[in-house]
Length: 263
Image (cartoon, one colour):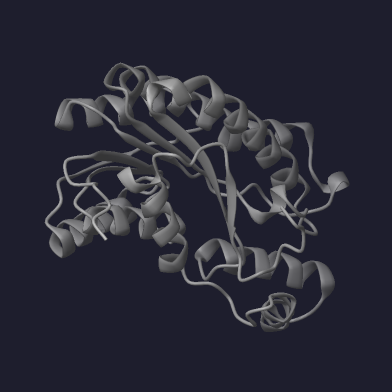
């Protein structure tokens, strides 16, 4: 299937590792040029070099903290200078720290809001005018299964990612007449560094081994296993494509059946 991504330019946040990198690799394999960003400069450089070698795609990488609006500005400006446009935006911020309500200070809530919600606003604000002018665009927000079924010990993520979902669903209706789609992709328990960190946090809180935590996640998942980043990235590439032009305002989980709700 030709996804129609040749000649498109995608900005993928948090793309030095995990789900963001998997999405970047998938988009590059389909012919898109990339603007990569993450906070870690060394990991980002390695990701850029690897993707360039594997796909031959044009890739620009900018080390930046997207919780800071000036970081967003630098990333978008670099993409515009290199390619002249940004057709696809993939927002993807690292998850806020785990823990129950009383373990998080006011400052922790503010930091979670800035990283997980305000970065989405700032990135969208920066690229949306161009998408509307060209009458084509794709905005994909990597959120979490927590927006459909709250996850234990993740009150920050459960709360702030729900706000992203409300924003995206409303924006989808506003920009649909301009050929711009807005969708959310919800990862379930997927084999990433973030999952390792979460397993460690839960194991410390419960006094059990991280391997036991992972076994519990697998037992809760009807498919009986942890997902792979490439499985998640496949959906992202489709929703970013020409073929998905009539899909907007959705929140689609990639979770092996973990979410038990009907919708």
